[in-house]
Amino acid sequence: MSAPPTPHLSRQLTLLPLAATGICSMVGASINVVPIMIQRSVPGIGPWVLPAFAFAAVPALLAALAYAALASAMPRAGGSYLYASRALSPYLGFVASFSQWFGLSIAIGVVSYVIPPFLRDIATALDWTSVATALDHGPIRLVVALLFLWTFVLVNLRGLGAYERTIVPLMIAMFALGAIVIVAGAQFTHADFAAAAERIDGRAIAPAPAAPFDLRTFLTASAVLFSSFIGFDAIAQAGGEAKHPTRDLPRAIGLAVVIVAAFYFAFASAVYHAVPWNYIAAESATRDLTAPGLLGYLLSPTWTVLIVSGAAIALTNDLPSMILSVSRLMFAWAADGIFPASVAEVHPTRHTPTRAILVSAGVSSLGIIGSHLAGDFFLGVDLLVVSMLVNFLLMCMSVITIQRRNPTLASAITVLPDVALRDTLAFAGVVALSLFLLVHLQADFSGPPRAWYFRSTPVWLIVMAVGTLIYRREMAQLRARGVDIEYRFSTLPAE
Image (cartoon, rainbow, N blue to C red; front, side, top):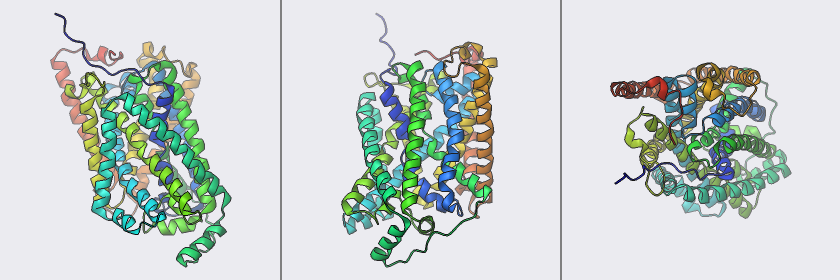
C-alpha cells in the first residue's frame, strides 16, 4: 500500500492577488503614519518630506528590479532567502532573511499597535467621546491591537481562498477611500487649516516658515521613508503559491511598486498641501498623529469617518499579506533543512504552513507588547529599515554574483536578460542602498541618548547572532546526515 502524498503548498494565486499582496504590504502605516510622524523621528525635515519621499523611491525601484529578475528564475516560497542562498551563500541567505523575518514580524506588531489610534479618530469624529478616551487607554489599546493581529492570523490559517477573499476587497476599499484624501487635500490650503484650527481649538497657527535644506537631515529622513516601499518582497515570498510564477511574479512586483509609488506621492502631497508642516511637527512631538485625522479639521464628520476608515483598512490589510510573507520565509528555511523540519509542515487540506504562521504571529505579538512598553513604535520601524536595507542590498549583490556562482539558474532569468544592463542596475542599487544603510546607522547612534535596547542596530546585531547560531547548528546536522551541501544550495527545492 503506497503512502499518502505529503501535504504541500498549493499554486493558486494569480496576478491580482499577488499584486495585492505586495500593495497591501506596502500601503498602511507607510502612508498614513510614517510621512507624518517623520517630523518627530527626524526633527528638522520640515517641508522637505515630499522630496525625501521621492528620493527614497530610487533604491526601492532598483531593489524591485533585482527581485523581479531573481523571481523569474527561482519561483519558490521564501523568495529572498532562496535568491541569496543560491546566488551568494547559504549563510548570507539565511541570516539576512532571518533578520528580515524578525523585522517584518515586529513590523506586523507595530502595524497592529497603530490601528487603535485610527479607531480613536473615527470615534472622535462621531463624537463618541468615551470610546475615543478608552482607545487611548494603554491596556485597551494593547488588547485591541492583539485582537486585530490574531484575527488575520486565523484568515491565513484558513488557506489561500480565505486570504484572497480578504485581501483583494480590502485593497479596493483602501484605494477608493484613499482617493477622498487626495481630492480633499488638494482643495484646501494652509490658510483654510489655520482658520479651522482657530475655530475648533481656539489656536492660532503661524504660517509655515521657510526652512533651510540640510543634506544630513534629508538623507536620514529618506532612509526612514524608505520603509514605506518595503513590502513588494512579500510577492517573492509567495513564489511557491503563484499559479503562473515565472510570468506573474515579476509583473506583480512591477505593478505593486509603480502603483504604490504614485499613490504615496499623491496622498502625501495632498496632506501637506492642506496642513502646515510646522503644525504637524509641533503636534507630533507630543502625540501620535494620522494623516486622515489631521484632515478632520477641514471635513465634515461623515467625510472624516470615511477617510479615517480608509486608513484603518489600509493598516489592517497590511496584516494578512505580511503574515503570509514571514511564514513562507520560515517554511523555506525548514524545507531546505536549516530550520527545524516541523516548521515546514503543511495542513493537509488548507495547504498552509500552520506552525510557521503561529510562530511568526507569536513574535508579532511581542512586537505589540514592545511598542506598548516603549511608548513609541518607531523602534520597530527602525529595526525593519535596517533589516530590509541589508536584505535589499544582498538581493542586488545576488544579481551581480549569480552569473558566476550559479550559471544554470542565471540562464533562467527572463527579466532584464541583458547581463551587462542587469549588473549595472544592480550595482547602482548596491551603491544607493549602502548609502541609505550608512546614513541610517549613523542616525541611530547619533540621536538623543537612550538605552541600547531602544536602538535598532544593537537589537539587529543580536538577531543576526541568534540567526548565526541557528544556522551553524542546523548545517552541522545536515553534514552529519551526509547531505550534499553544495548540490542542495545550488538547486531549487522540490515543489
